Length: 385
Ligand SMILES: Nc1ncnc2c1ncn2[C@@H]1O[C@H](COP(=O)(O)OP(=O)(O)OP(=O)(O)O)[C@@H](O)[C@H]1O
Ligand SMILES: [Mg+2]
Image (cartoon, rainbow, N blue to C red; front, side):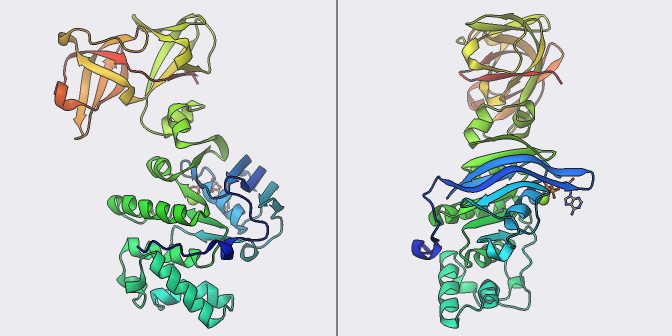
C-alpha cells in the first residue's frame, strides 16, 4: 500500500471543518420506532472529529438503525442529529457528506474495479480528468492499482472489501460509515483487513463510525466504543475503560471473558470490603472495587477478568500474597490448552470461576485442588438481577 495521503486536507476540509477531537457527529435523545419496536431508545452520543467509533452490541440492538439515521437513509422518530453542529433534519443522504460501506458491499459485477470506484463520481458528473485523478490516487493509496482493470468477481473477499472502501473514500466524505464490512471474510483475513482499515482511517484522519457485533474487532480498532443493548446505550468509552471499568454487568459480560461469582457482602468499611463465597471469604481494598451495591449483607455478583486471577497448585503451598487478603481454594473441573495460555474452569464452593494462566510453561497443567489469588487489578461488584 502506498504511503501517500490520498485525500489532501484542503479538498476534504469544508468551511465548517473543526479541529480534530471537536464534536463532529452528535446524536441527541435519538429515538427510532418501528411500530411497537423501539429500535433506538433515547440515544445520546458525541462522536469526535477524526475518531474511530464503534457501535457494538448483539444482533438486533439497533446498530444498523443508528448508522442509517446518521447516513440519512432513515429519519429518526424523534431527537436531534447534528453533523458539524448543523441539524440534519430533512437533509437527504447525498447532501450529508457521509458515505456508507454496507456489509454486502454489492460491487457492480459488469464493471472493472476502476469503474466501480469511479461510479459515484460519474453520477455526480465529476469532470473526466478529475475523476481519473481521484480514482487513480485512491487505487494507489489502497493498493489496488495492479487490479484496477479486473472484474470484482476475480478478486478475493479482502480485495473486494478494499474496492468497496475505495468506492466510499473516493467521494471524500467527512464521515465514513461502515456496517459490519468484514463479516464476509474468514477469521484470518478479518484480522488482516481490520488492521489495514484502521491504518487507512488513521492516515486520512477521517471520522469513522463502524458497526460490529465482534467485541475483539471493536477493541482492536476503536478510539471509542458505544455498547448498545435493546436500543439502549450501555456505556460509551475507550476500549480500556470498557474492559477495566465496565459500568454494568452487560458490558462486563459482552466485552472479554469474565468470571462472575455470587458473593455476599459481609463487611464494608472505608478501607476494605469483605465478601463471603460459601464457606470461604475474601477481602479487597475498598479502592480497587467499583461498586454498584453498597449494602452490608447484600448478595452481589463479583466480576473478575480471568487473567487477573493467579492459579497455583495447592500442593505447592502459598505463593506471594495478592490483592489484599484474597485467597480461594477450589478444584479444577476442566482446562483447555490454548498455546499462549491455559484456560481453567475451577469449582469454588459450587460455583465456576474461569482463570487464564498466561505462563503455563512455568506451572505446567494443573489439576486437583488449586489456590486462587487475585493480582493487582480492579474488581466490580454488580447487583444480583
Ligand atoms: N425496517 C424495519 N421494520 C421493522 N423493524 C425493524 C426494521 N429495521 C430494524 N427493525 C428492528 O429494529 C431492531 C434493531 O434493528 P437493527 O437492524 O438496527 O439491529 P442491529 O443491531 O444492526 O442487528 P444485527 O447485528 O443483527 O445487524 C430489531 O429489533 C429489528 O427487528
Ligand atoms: Mg445490523
